[in-house]
Image (cartoon, rainbow over all chains, first blue to last red; front, side, top):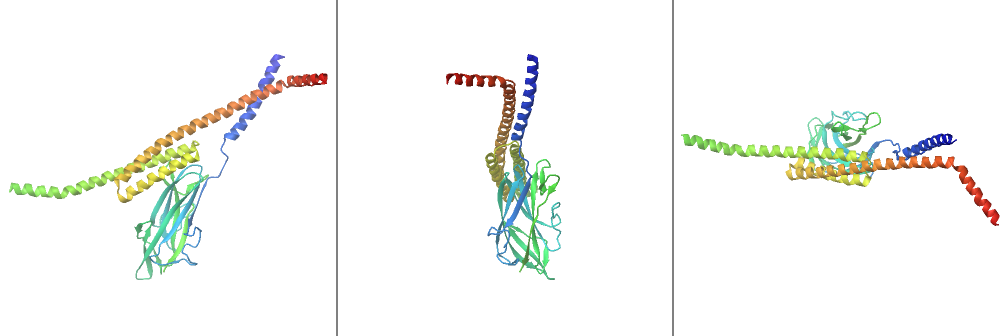
Amino acid sequence: MIQRRIIVFILLFASFSLVYSSIAYYALSKPPAQEFMAWGVFSPSGTLSNYFSGSEANVTSGKSFDWHFAITNRMGSIQYVQIVYRLGNSTSSSPNATASADSVPQLGNSSTFIPNARTALVNFTWSFTKKPVPGGSVYIDMTINGQQVSPSVSAVAGQKFRFFFELWTYDVALNSFQYGYRGQNSRVGVPLQVWFNVV
Amino acid sequence: MRFRLMALLGVLMLCVSPFSLSREQAYGQSAQVDNARTALLQAFALVQEADLQGASLSQISQLADSLNLALHYEENATGLGSAIDANRSLQLSNATAVQALSVSNAARTQSVFDQASAYSLAVVAGFGSALSVLEVHRFNNIVRKIRMRRIRLE
């Protein structure tokens, strides 16, 4: 009789422990969440439009523009982020979800560390001076965040220049910056671009 | 003749020495910037490890602020060739790395403690529940006795 009671007790104890341990495991586990990074380039008015304080994308030489990037980290851990700036024209190959625009000359970059679930702001202040050359092409000399650069890209009559902005994240295992952020199966590129005409 | 040759050699050495000195200085600065860069990346790896171990957001934010300041110094050192900034960046990165290590260890210990507490509680609750089910008739008897006593008193 006692032996039977002991067996029943052991069975009940094991069953209850299993149920309660499952509850404990569920409570201790991190809730599943899709990891991502989101970002945008903002005009001085804090909007994702109206970058040139006019309806058109015509910009005059010598004028300074104070833009900023807002980057949100939802990767589950702190990230070392680098924004790469490039200048292209209408025929340049654009960066996409899988590849950066390596063929387009880089103007510079800015880096920052962003904790998880936080948004970082990175300034992007730029101006340019026009350098017309015979044949109708226009080159520009630029000042970006105080650094002077002379891109090797030109545009016919100064029309359809475009900025490419690429987000790169530092991969500790690979010991280098990698294009985009680490997705579920592969890296995800999230490039931005802004068109402008030089007048 | 010999004196002239010596004088010429002396003048030549005087002219060359500033170049070699500046090259050595530049090499030294470049090495300092490289060291600062390496220290910054190591500190970042440790902070990320602490984050993955479950350190709190406020602790990680504080470490991120230090990393951003070290990065600012490192960028100044690279852009302006400032050895002082390279040194500042190196020191701050090293201090952040030490802090990150301590935060990581504390987070790991806390995580182990939380798990041990939760599973211990599950086992104790399992024991209590099994005992309750097995001895439920005793409780019923006690309740019945109390009720009977009340009825008698009335």
